[in-house]
Length: 272
Image (tube, rainbow, N blue to C red; front, side):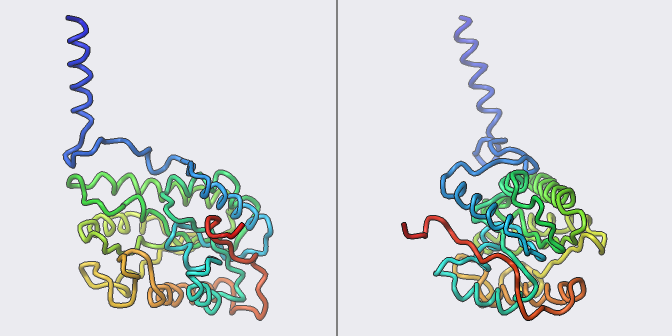
């Protein structure tokens, strides 16, 4: 009889842990908790980024996931993006520290494990939270992801300010993702929340979504690649055009020489 009761209790707990969306709740850790990527390729990428950080010469530090990473990577398939990166940022000593697939948890882990240590950039450009939102429709209203992701982005800001106290942080609003339009209200509410973290001086909020998409968040033609998530050249250029006045005001015009370390790429694409 006791064993039957135990089975019933376990079954009840399992049923209670399933959300209205049919997926178990609380599988992911809170968005403000550092979590490493377990795959070997991500660990190799982290080692590359650590080496890049240690080389110094970085005045503008870009931090984020694949949307950031593709812009300034050495991967051959994104050659035109790197050319655009150089056209816009050469002379400002900009370095890219994005890694594809990263959530706020993963970005926090990379920061906690050395990628910003002793870099001392003058500006940090942060775009985070896209992968936390994902492309699944909100499980409920209000979407619990809103508060969680807001906390995650705040945690990244706090670490950046701790490790680079003299840097001005340009906090980007999460960009539209058209792989599921149902997530746009969630993105808009997160952006409204994180805009409050800006003081207009050491933290500046920059939302370029109105220049990239219509009122419903549908990206204009040419802004993104066919997946509706990652930017194409037009999208990156809008981002650059929004950043350059800030960089000019804080750093002056770009110099004739650039001292940032060379770009890194996806370790899995490197021929052995």
